[in-house]
Structures are given as C-alpha cells and as structure tokens.
Image 1 (tube, one colour):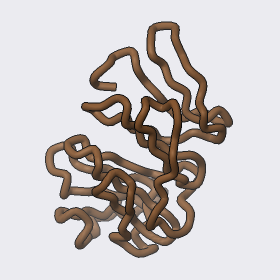
Image 2: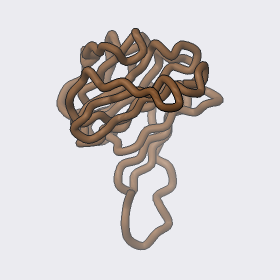
Image 3: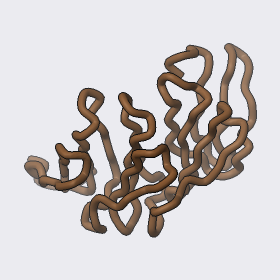
Image 4: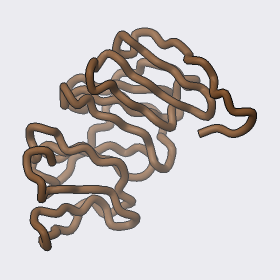
Length: 166
C-alpha cells in the first residue's frame, strides 16, 4: 500500500489473498481459492481489488477482511490467471479480460462494460500511469492500444520475433 509501507496483500495458490500489516504480522485470507492479481488503491488501503482463478473479481472495502463479488456485466471466464489493471490516477477505473472480450469499469466494479469482442480478449493489460485513456493489451503476438478509453482500438506493429508469442 502506498499509504502504509507495511501493508501488502497478494494472491496465493489455494490460500486466497492473505495480508501483511507489520514486519512479522500476517492475517489469513477469508477468501479460500487460488488468489491472483491484487491492487491496493493508492490513497485508500482499505479498498482492494483482487480475483481468484478464471477472472472471478472481488473487492474489499475493509482492508481485505471481507470480500464481495464484482462480476456484474462480465460474460464468460478469463484465463486461469486473468489480467486486470487499475488506473493509478482513478482507482474506480479498471480493465479485465474474459473469453468473450475486454471489459472496463469506471465505478469500482459495480458494472463492467464490454469494450472489445472476443478478438480483444487479452493475456496482459496495462493502463497508462500518465493518461488513463491509454490502454495497452497483449494476446499472443497481437498488441493493441486504445487512446480513448476503449472506444476504439488500433493494432500495434507485430512482434519482430520469427517465432513465439507472449
């Protein structure tokens, strides 16, 4: 957490999303699953976004003590470790992916809106730390970019490698 150097949380296999509150102080996860990508809101360590396998997104508003589902609007499943990114300048703005496409929320996960079809499903997502309207995604060798918060997408130059992908 940017507001507390001792506080951290992260996904663990079979043990959910445990947290650390001090040098030697940990608390167990109340979510028992394969914990995955976790984002602690920069200016409010009580607000945490995370997920468990296949893109089942959850949110905590009490520092990871309890979690509630934030799947409204997402169709299908993500990969086992589903990409998700939080806008560092607007904590309610996140992107994720499912087999049905790419999704965005601007209200902290209350509602996700599809901003790209299945051809835009991604294995990696990054929101620019400078401009939240700029989003980069990657799937195999397809790199896409939006400069208008997912309204439209441009495919970037393909990888210059003769073989391989992400």
